[in-house]
Amino acid sequence: MTWEQAVVAVLLVALVTALLATRVKPAWLFAGAAFVAFQLGLTDITEVSHNFTNPSLLTLVLLILTSAALEKTRLISWVARQLSQGRLASVVAKMGLSTAFLSSFTNNTAVVVSLIGAIKRNQRHAPSKLLIPLSYAAIFGGTLTLIGTSTNLIINSFVEDAGLPSLGFFAPTLIGLAVLFGGLLILVPMCHFLPTRDEQGEDDLPYVLEAKVDRVSPLAGKTVAEAGLRALRRLYLAEIDRNGTTIAPVSPDTLIYAGDRLQFCGDVESVATLQEIPGLELFGQHHINGQNLLETVISQSSALVGQTLKESQFREHYDAVVVAIRRGHERLAGGLGNIELRAGDTLVLVPGKSFCKGGKKLDREFLLINGLDSSTRLTSRHSMGVLAGFAAVIGAALLDILPMLNGLAAYLLALLLTGTVNLNEIRRRFPTDVVIIVGSALTIAHLMITTGLSEKIGLLFMEGFNGSGVYGALVATYLMTLVLTELVTNNAAAALAFPIGYSLAVSYGVEPMPFIMAVLFGASASFISPYGYQTNLLVYSVGNYQLKDYLRIGVPVSIVYSALVLTLIPLVFPF
Image 1 (cartoon, helix red, strand yellow):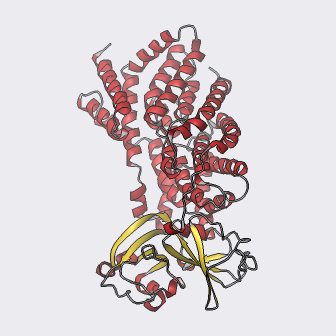
Image 2: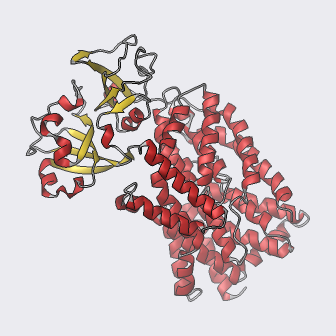
Image 3: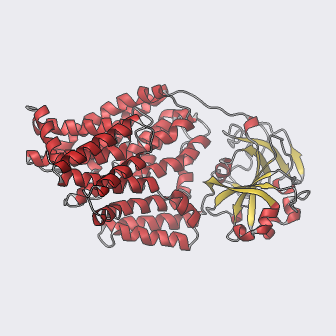
């Protein structure tokens, strides 16, 4: 073993040990390993900079940034409505198919982030029954195309770095489809074994929101119960204002008429909930078009104190629309525009373009201004434009008219120029950790291959699986990647497993594609731990899950997934 191989081997062992035994962020560990390699002269600045500007990495970054606009479209509202109709099994099946479809054409982590709110707002089933299936469906969907998950694009970076042709957009699709339908067949019945944890209470719904029943609303003429407004989760219908007459409390048999103003108690997510109910017009709806929500607290010196929103002409003076008001846990009565404001009241705002330019005026009126993770929905017309633009980018890439990197760059610029997303959203969403991990991992993987270390590890694997042949090596590559995914996250697993899988293919003198697919699908095979895959971690705390919940559902799903993958890879990609 040469000294270069020895140094890279030590770095690799130290990296894996640190990933397993410490809580240091993987980005810092990968960056540290790449930095040491650079300082020791194993790589140079040209190679490092090339790795951090890899086309697949840049494509991944642009996909993550543009997904900020896709999350605001009415497509998410449509999916949310489907989740409120039917029994648990049918809801999980519909959710699984729609989530997988969305995940196949945009980053699956972004899809889960978008749909978590919709799951929490689902009115029929506890979120804990749906969130793990949501995560697993996003994982299945991520394996359908090259851009479905960050892992696929990272692996494509390694493929290109090894001098191989780039993976096709639909390279993993056949196996991915089998995984999707096989996974859903086991996931739908198993979802009944998930716990029911549904914590809600009126005391936890401090915001006052208001919506008007449209003149041609499908809700008009129905009772509150028939309209589905009685059993809303995290949203409580407190009173109805009908031509100046207040109806409170509201009974299930109360009829709803066109023009009624409905006052709700809810949380911040309720803004999106009301936008998703057909026939309701949220207070200030005409000025809402995908903006991020802001939370403000009225100061003691504010001119708003003692005035209502109507009296203060809030929108005209501040270029913002108030969609919710909170006063501690006090139950506020009356229409949103008629509530007399006090110091300390919290307002949820939809800001206009000039709101944040208020400077000293805002400092005098409000104690603090916080950005919220929630955003309003785009109008139907704007949503169609955003979706059509994204479809055009994908179509142009598939037809070889315009590379996806170029198309996404132009698309992101268009989103910024039209105000669909802003620079603050871009800064907040920029995937710094992903960039550091991928750039550093490419450096380490390149060193493993160029120094011959991965070839030596491949030979050790061949000796260890002597008699099992090339298929045994394929199974070993897949299982190694799967275990690493569960232990040290999917992106790290792909970075560590790819050089070994590629060297095994070279050592056996066979096509590398089966081994590349083994790494690709193994890196997405995280079902029995909340820590191996980002979507699992996203739903972990929201659903109040325990590790045993993942084991109960994830073990059978992992077995079915692995059996399908290991059976189909040699058939679709012969050695």
